[in-house]
Image (cartoon, rainbow, N blue to C red; front, top):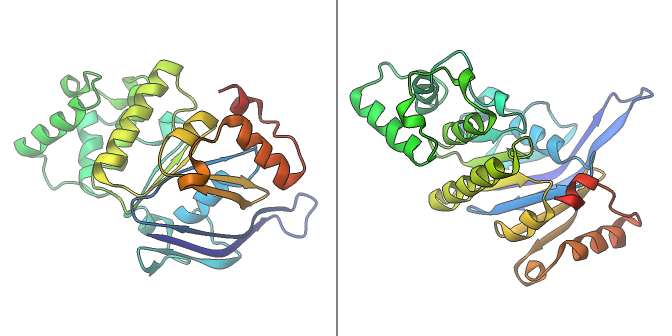
Length: 261
């Protein structure tokens, strides 16, 4: 479903703040893969997502999605087939519009439904019931009135309303309280597995990285240093992951937020 070949990206080249964010990174993602990505701060995880989504053009290499080369395609065209959630719950929906209007945008694939029919409204209600948050009875409420967890759950539903070819989740539960984060994560698993979506998820929770999905990637200095799946992944502990990091980099894994999760 996704083939990334030897991509590189350097920000502010030739200046004192030059930073090579992606370094000759290659990755093959099969249709239906659910991949967790971990790494210390600055490892290049979010930069990889930004490259896939088209936030910037890579300096070299190629990105192919479902057989189509999207290396030089604009971000808004990629958004039609790539769903994306961010850490900030406020980024995935329009706060000044109602829940119903937001879902109409999602149903229209980024455009606008010519009219919201009674059948559309019933579909929206049924989808919202799956969240178990009572939002199906608040469809005329503005999204800006919702809690962070409610907005993130709604954003997840919007990003997958028309199943995307690829779903990118950038620490989408990190800003939520533990109870709400668990609920959104459970919903994520239900939607991804139920729809058979191809999904890449950046997480700071190393336990989740080993328990969810079928592959775990570890990144450092803009490259993938471990790609764990099958028997190699089965039975690994957080301690094993930190040992692998030290073995590959010669450094101690020092991301407190990840180790304490």
